[in-house]
Each structure stands twice: as C-alpha cells, then as structure tokens.
Length: 579
Ligand code: GLY
Image: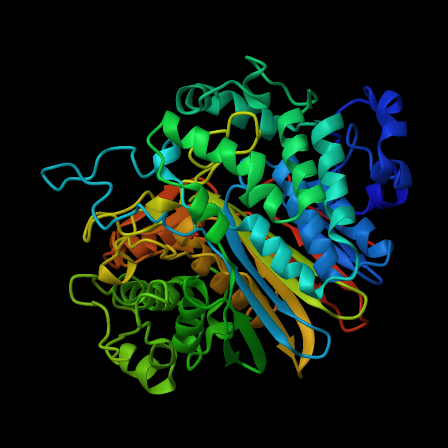
C-alpha cells in the first residue's frame, strides 16, 4: 500500500479484498498484464487526489483506473470515457450498463462542444396507454419490472458515436471490460448487499439464471465472473455495433422479451441511432456553465435555478442556512413545475428551451418570490412559455484539456431486474421515465404531461445532468451525479457550493443535500442535514422529511496550478484515478 497517500487525511482507502486467483489468470489478460498496478482482486477506493496530467472519477475504482490507464497508453478523454463506460458495465452492474442509455457531454480542447444523446427510445410497438389497464389505470410494475419496462438500449451506440473523437481502436477500449467479465473481479460489501437484495427480483423477471444469481449469499471479497457478458462484449469487440444491435445479441434480447411481455423487436434494435444535441449554455457569476439539453431536463433546470438565484447574495447566506435553503428551494419549485409541463423529447414536442432560460422569463418566474415566505405548489404552476434512482456519472479530463462528462442509466438500481438470458447484461426500466398517464407520478414521484407521453421511437424525459464549467474560457470543472429527479438539484447545489460558498470540490460534493421537485410539495433532506434548519423550515410552513443519502456525485476541477483535482462522493465506492 502507498504509505505516503495513506497518511493523507484527504484520501480514504478501503481495502476491498484479499488477493485471490489473480496470478493464475494474469497471463491470459492482455490489458491487466500490461497494467499490473490495477489488480481486479485487490483494489482501493481513493476519494480525492490531484493529478498532474489527467484524471477520471467514477462509481468504481477499477473503472476509474482503467480509464486513467487508457490515457497513459496515449488515449484522450474520449478513449478513457469509452473504456470507463464498458468497465462500469461489468464492475458496477447496478447502474453501469450496456443495456441502458445516457448522455455524453464534452468540450474539446479547442472549445468545440459535443452533446451525444443515446437515451433509450420507446419500441415501435409502444403507445401512449401501453401501461394502463382497460379502466385506464396504471398496471402496477409493468413500466418498472421485467422486459415490458425496457426502452431500446442506447449505450453501446453512444460509445460508438463517442469514438469519433477518440484516438485508440475501439477493440482496445473494450478489452479491459472483457477481461474483468471473463476473469472476474472482487466485489465490495455494497455490491454484495445489492446483489443479495435483488436476487429474488432477478429470478422472477429473467428467463434464466445468470452470474448474479449463481450464489445465494454474496459477501464483500467474493469474485464475480460474468462469462455471458464477456461473450457479449467480445461480439461487440469483433463486430462493432452489429455485435450488439444485430446477430446473436439482438436475438437474445428479443428472446428475453417474450418471457415477460417486452416490446423490443429486432427492427427496433437495428434502427436505434444516437443523436447529437446542442448543449445548454449559460453564465453564472463569471463562470460559463454547459449542460445537457432535452431529452434531458437537467440542463434547462440548472440554468433556470441558477439564474433565478443569481441576483441574490447567496454567498453571504451560507451553506444550508434557512435563507439559502428557502431561496434555492423556491427556485427548485418553479423550475420543476416547468419540467412537468414543457419538457420532453424535442423531436416529438416543441420544448421552449430559449424562452425557459431567457432572462425575462426567469425574472417573471421569480417576481412573486418573497424572501422568508414559504411558497406553495398549488399557486406556483408552470409558466407560460410559448414556443431513479440508479444512474451513474463519471468525469474525465485529459492532459490536453479535453473535458468529458458522462451520465448513463438503467433507471432503477439493476434496471428492470431482467438479465438477458445468455447475454449476461441487465436491461433498463426507462419506460417509467415517460409520463405513463398524465397526473400519475413515476417512481420518482415526478409528474408529467403530454410533452412526455409515450410515442413509438420517442425518448423519455431524463433528469441526467452531465455538466461542464469553464472559467475565462478555459476548462475548469466536469461534474455530474445519479439520483433520478434529484440529479439537477444536486448539480445545482454542488455548483453553488463551489462558486458561491467557495468550498473545495470534495466538500461541495459531500455536503448534505436538499430536494424539492414542485410536486409533491415537500422538501427531502439527507439524514445529516442540520436539525435546526429542518425545524426552522417547518416553522416557515414547509413539509420537510429526511431520507437516505441521494446521489453519488463525481467531479474533476482544474486547480490554478493546472493539476486535475478529482473527487468521488462519500456516498458510494466512488473512486478517482489519474497520473
Ligand atoms: N432514469 C433517470 C433519468 O434519466 O433521469
């Protein structure tokens, strides 16, 4: 163990396992043989560290180390992002994925912005009322569990679109994931708990048993082998996009559909294509913020909320005080009301983006705000604008200053709990992110209307908010988080912590969070939120309840000396790597 780093108060090591079978497999492992410092059977969580050249921060130490090693081999931030994403699909099965979808937001060293949307899409057999019974009521579980809940997966196509900006061959970027799946890796306590807790759902929703169900009682330190997933990744490595969207993998996906009433056809898979989206951009107190546009609601929401609070002296109010929380919550209420009314897939619904983030609209939205007075979601409704929880985020900044922020998801933890038989990967339950019936909340309690109704080929509204910040037109921050509808609020609070409260990246990420999403008209706070502020908010008339930790925010910030300071959230096994 590196005793120097161990002494640092800011670095937390968690020894995850003992050395097991690594030596017997090492010869067969092209990537891991070349990078002996990365040991899938014994690794540590590094929560914060500054690197001279390049850094990755993700939900899993092995995925971060893989991304960093790819950059050491000559790859750029895009190469690292692709390798990290495929590795996460193996080592972080609850949210890392090839059966889900997501968004890649990037700013190239030359300032060019790239937004790649590989959000899942509704199957061609999808329809507005597909999750309702004959009386028009939602059928419990149909949009959340089993193959019926799955949208057409976009992640693999997204990685191939991202590859247009990378330097190394795709086959090399998939290799570490194949080796991790084939030769196994040691799982953490948290993962063991997740697999044990979801076991009965896996068995119920999947046609066949698989790697996750081979043991009754997983423990931290066990090695997870995923031979079916390794074979699927190998097909992608050998056949490119067709290795997933056609041939054996497509056949296996469609076969799995028939087990639990799924809708995805071979034609749906073959037709799936990522889309390039123009990022949302806005300025906040001397910083330029770049985030994702619809079908994500995230970019619009953080633009609205930050612009709503910009005229106020937030920095004087302080972190999690009654003044700052009330102001920030009232901005959340207004922005999330607009989300429910105005946001959806822009290819199917005219989202009034420029109006929603315009100065005049923002000013009008806050015109009825009264400092110190609790608002109400009965009277605050969407403005007139004419024109899960398990997701995962990772950030990369390379030597050249290319910044990448990627958020991908299966929606709920372990998605729809359906493992594609013989292909070894989980499918998403993203169809629940559509408004399955106007006025009926989804699993995040979020309401939606026509803008987000189901139509064949349409992409469901997302909250994923991969975000970049520049300062004086230079790369500065790459950040994001999972957490369903809490995501935009987390990113908003994280950025305010850094920009207004001048907190370090790590402290900003770990700070206690609060969340208001218009409906329900309530503030959720994390369990370590200051009790006196909870009581003060209640006295003002707010409905406040504690809930478990939300999100696992990961970010990288470029320090004035050029170092890449990477930080992983205290809330998970999130870990940083770099050189
Ligand atoms: N499934 C979470 C999101 O896309 O917002």
